Length: 489
Image 1 (cartoon, one colour):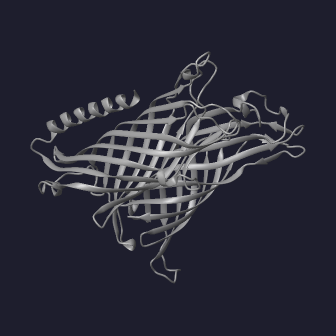
Image 2 (tube, one colour):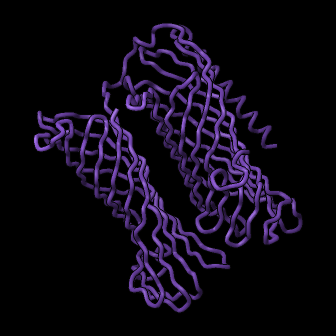
Image 3 (tube, helix red, strand yellow):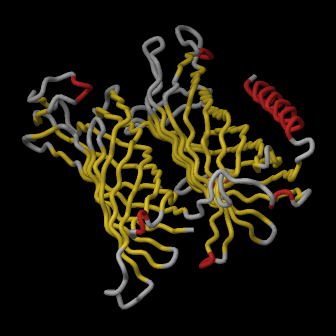
């Protein structure tokens, strides 16, 4: 049934796309391209923290059976002398996954299918940057019916459908040091509607299919695409975070994350129809961008203190950031001051409070969304009781930097700088009470708050290295020392 629905949706989107395409491309047509290929997910994990996970790829038995199909269609044309593009992007992935749950055992060789389709429209903002947005749909189906775990628990098919709005930056990013002339894609998807169905009714009796709504979540995607030997190669990374659903018949879908990385290999078909592509306007002329990876040595507050017995409070962990930025001003007032706009996706790691039976800790009042007054002493009633706080954020801010001359360096190409960092972050945190043998409870928090920081770094050629201190205001605040490596292009 759901496959028929997918085909109808695909056909409808393609009809809409074709109609729009014919309207705008009549006399300004430049380029039409079809792209076909395969994707190989090296690693995939769906996780409900401390409760269960589904994994494919590295470390699993059936990783050679994970493969995806790709079809992409692009049509470029001039609109008011701006170079624009429509894109119809589709993928269908097949997985063999392994299931693990703290309460219901394990299961292997689970068939999973993921379908993703997007209709996009983009405009060339500068000679290096194209910005796109549109509408996307993601469909996932787990085949669990009539399957049993190692503990004898029966499974049921599960369907997840998400509609989202993608915001994509495509950046021409040549890396001459590696003889590459590729495109960097950075994407943020805001989920606007989520529908999840657990098909439990096939067991009969009191068992019924359950339909949940979950409209709160986002997806981050990063990839780098380059041509080699007539094919396009695109290593990619994706992360999805979805908050807990509404409650139906006393049940709900817990908050969850999905992490995937792998490689896409495609073949492009199409040719340029005219030379109009070289005669177009741009929104701005900025040509300096950067992209990098940042290690976060973070301390995330738990709100617990004064542990007794074997209780421990571990607030420090190592996370990471994916960072991209754009230079908006250079040499302000003829001073060596630059101003960048920076966007980052941050994973702060975990903060954990652990204890055993009769141990105690005190709370500052934030635990379980203010359930207990500040200063309340909490007593652990079982062994191996953990409270785990996971934190993520998407940030955008401005980053001024002051550049020093290089007279005190032996290498005259080496330059130093100091920087400040201030902006807004959309954050989400999950607080899991993990008690073995019980129904573990998760409390979710989210919001938009400020972050600030300062750093010092070195530049040489296209490379930049920086050490930075950042403070993020969240429900449970975070402080991070970071080390980053960035490539300027």
